Amino acid sequence: IDTRLRGCLGIEVTVTGPRIDLHSGTYGGPAMNPIRVLSKVIAALHDRNGRVTIPGFYDGVADLPKAVKKQSQSLNFSDAILGILAQRLAKRLCGNCRRPGAAQEEEIDAMLAEYCHEELAAAGNKRKSSQILKATLIEWKQRFGGEDGELRLFRPVGCEACERTGYSGRVPLHEILEATDPLRAAIRERAPTSEITRLAMAEGMRTLRQDGIEKVLQGHTDMGQVRKVCTR
Image (cartoon, rainbow, N blue to C red):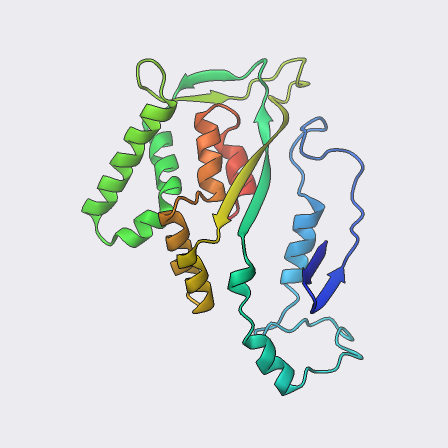
């Protein structure tokens, strides 16, 4: 892991993991990515003030002078941001044996609720929420529906090509935030995360989960895999 703020600080941690591909399904069920495990462990080692609780972690580290702290707070990092990319890898359904089937109503309802989560939270009333869900379903049928306009979901089966796992390879899920002027202004004014997310989605950003659901509707993966890698 290499995390740095250019010109200010840097830390590098080397993680040694298994030499086989844990996500291919070749050796059975899914295994947690070592990087994600490490991230969770590190995140759990902070106190309420954000300080690392590992004994001796700050030994020999001098506190920054107040003048330097004040100067760093005045730096305008928002103008330096071009965009932010998040990526996850989900298991890809085997193209040789995946089985299509009509999507059940309860499955579509659950997918709609997850896809529209942010919009529904901001809707404020049931009528507007219903309109959001209805409009999204119509869009899905236009983009992903078959000749009859109905949605299909593909299921894992298992064959010799995928060693009976139902999956072969991985499919990337992306979340891309483009730093537009309104977003830069929100970052500069230290707007809440919810407000920045709302602005980004209004300008066309899709969340990781939304991109994953679209790839489910395209037949590349299934909701079980999307939910495993999109923890938020």
